Image (cartoon, rainbow over all chains, first blue to last red; front, side):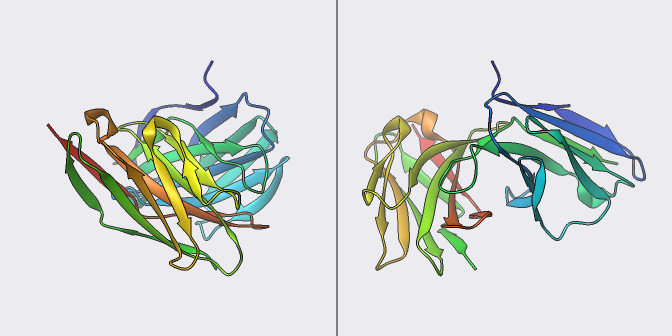
Amino acid sequence: DTAVSQTPKYLVTQMGNDKSIKCEQNLGHDTMYWYKQDSKKFLKIMFSYNNKELIINETVPNRFSPKSPDKAHLNLHINSLELGDSAVYFCASSRGQGDYEQYFGPGTRLTVT
Amino acid sequence: AQSVTQLGSHVSVSEGALVLLRCNYSSSVPPYLFWYVQYPNQGLQLLLKYTSAATLVKGINGFEAEFKKSETSFHLTKPSAHMSDAAEYFCAVKNTGGFKTIFGAGTRLFVKA
């Protein structure tokens, strides 16, 4: 059983399109995250939800919009895709706040052409 | 605000040699500290974490790290490198009571036969 799953694994699209990435965790965790990893492997937090409430909203273009329909799911919608959005996007979850480690999904490699 | 510095973007060792990956942190309050490993085309996995208990922390795959408050360091070591240890390693810090985990830029470990 996959603990944190993401779909799709690869996403190739043209500039200006709108796309979504879905994430699901079956660990019963309260907190979920979206990270962006660039080509140099730098990992940057984008958003975090705790019990469906947005608790981290970093300086991210408002073309990016997260949505958490329930504690087990956190989706990321991106409008008007740009070349600079090309990256690997990781979903993660943790039991809650505090000293809990994060469990990462396999990543979604987004390529904008 | 917390921050993490990983010294050396690339480290190369011979199989069987000592592995030492350096991490220094900055935090205004007692931190939680983590080491994660990322294998090619995968998400991050927890190696070990420090949460204010024992200062020497043992993790998976023979790795350990020592929290040194006076040096604000949390270096990762393994006595004998194995080819399968080749991966990207990330140090991360989180403030107690905080929401956000900050990741270092990563260190790529190469293991030579």
